Length: 290
Image 1: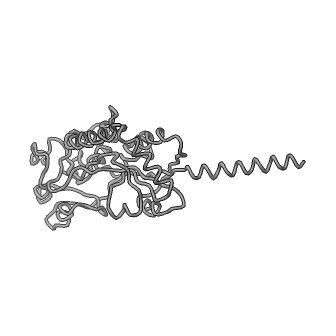
Image 2: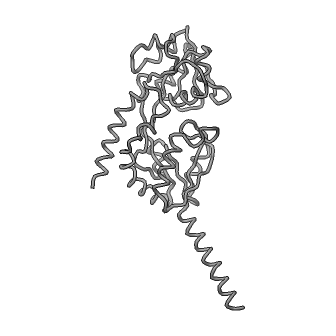
Image 3: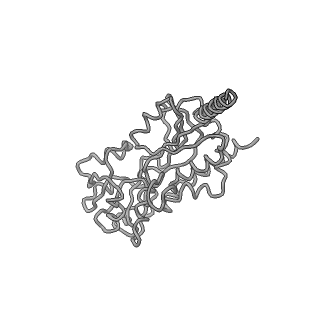
């Protein structure tokens, strides 16, 4: 009997030790419903840009226990301030203020900036012509055009000043799957939308037959933004970021990496971002040398 009790206690202690070890290796990846970066519902679930990158990283980091937690955009910041568990996010923008409360990796992706999105061959297309960048006032102050933007976002000054101008022909609108902004463009109810091109392309793919929607960057703004992996400041979080930094230089050299990053962009946006992609890729190649 004593021997059985001893073996039972030993098993319980071993199980508890394994649980503690698992917790020490547990990485919680925060996911939000922000298509097409992260897609949580429907036939395209898990095929968002950051979903694909998170899956690749997890496979290359098998010594950690990976868990995905769905949360809202508003909850990400408080969770990253916590130190009880290790949480990480893919696709975060870098700021000096944020860097005081979390660890950042090397760049993992390039994202697009805001653009005007419109139907090819439309009145807006005629104004834009073959310009890669357009002065937003030439579109937004044109009283023959009607545009839209999504409120409660941070916009660069050159965009926010136009949005707030009394002469701007812009409507504030919350874009969602229930109100497909691409359908508003292709039906002619809107002439243009200020939005990230990949968001518009995601909405357009839900329309079976429709004219092509294209984008043009806005003058005075930087069209590209680098995106990173970030983890909260725990011992494990720091180790995860260090391990990811060892993987990223080689990851950027994958033959399909540009397609992974740009799969949701129209051709105009791809053309603008490709030079920066090649620049980062070359920089990563240098880091990858022994």
